[in-house]
Picture 1 (cartoon, chains in turn brown, purple):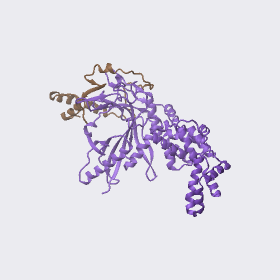
Picture 2 (cartoon, chains in turn brown, yellow; picture 1 turned 30 degrees about the vertical axis):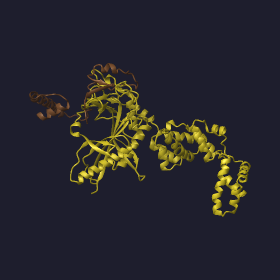
Picture 3 (spheres, rainbow over the protein chains, first blue to last red; picture 1 turned 90 degrees about the horizontal axis):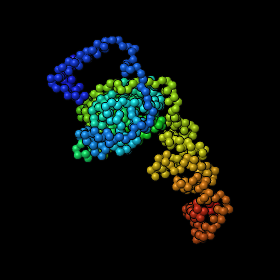
Picture 4 (cartoon, rainbow over the protein chains, first blue to last red; picture 1 turned 90 degrees about the vertical axis):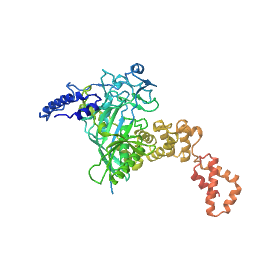
Length: 95
Length: 478
């Protein structure tokens, strides 16, 4: 399965990755060969096989519902580019 | 042309845990910005999410309450999109294997008939933060206190055919999550959020293109938003146009919906299993224990109230509308022994006083034992209805039990005939001209004039005389 350059552009945009024109061709080729591998695996009969959600054959451990974190806002905000009134400031987003 | 409305709802219920779904930060509402956002919630490098056990219990409780087949295995997935209030660039949610599978609830329609509405699934996920768009010199302020708050997203089948049905379904889910104690249901604070998928089609035809309505924070607005949207779509289709699949925000001030963003791109979430979290596996015993711990569900309780307390359908529905109210009512009945009288007082004077003072049933100044104790004094004839209202008001103001109020204020109904007779004589002696007028009047006028004397006697006895006896004595003596 081969990807069009336009598809690569769309995927790159969704992932917020900058891929310039020279790279596009190569990335399209790389991704296509990955998809070819997936295609090959798709041919295997997997009926009766439980889809693997995680490479570790273990189940999720749970923690009890207790508050264990203290407020460290000042520490966290010391590395933020801009804050005001306790809020992180980011470039304006409008819906 | 005839159109059929098709509605499905997505409800986000905030789970009432103390800490977040994947971190030990608190979930309390209204804290100062970012004081409840820890390193995990901020998506700082190197952190790992650890699942809150209570969230799993709550999800399973909900599944059991809607008769869903328990899901032994569920998996967390990343839902990828970029927005500043989502620090990691993905939301941890569930996709192919949610914690709750197919179930259903029963709603009561306006005509009193019932209808089953399917629940497709319900899955666990983390909430995002909040963006504040105003007042930061062209920048957006981000508060991540809400980031990582546990949500149960409950997805219905497109089974509803009118705004009223959608509201009935949303109310039913609201009632259930509150009954089973997994969500406080506070819509103003965003603990219970409803999104509506609305489309129209020729009756029984293929499904039309849907619009997703967001930003609805009350049941009233849900009904209005859907009705507005249906009209909008009818206008478009009847003018020969076509409905665009999009997200629309409901604006309560203008009572309209407005396009928010095109879904094509936003919908490409590229889900995949989250490698930071292992699959959740629940054994049969765990599920059985959760089911065994469920309280009586609202529908069951309503039916029991109808049959055990001989209440009509409306009263039983009203008294079981919340678990707290139903508990209160049952406690009153337990003390007073008269289910009908208890229903009248709980739905009447008590509800009125709560409403007047803007209080919830859990904050009622009159405890069930107090109200029940007072109803006993009505049943045994100590109190008339009128005196009972005085006792109720006194108890409401913190005057203690009914018996204490009756004793301290001498509110016992006077049943001693001689005592009442003496009061009647005094009233007649003090109002001789009225007595003379009465004796000359015809029957019609007399009936009216009698009211004057009854009023005087009641006044003289501070309302404690039995009005029936006063009437009888007055007629005799006049």
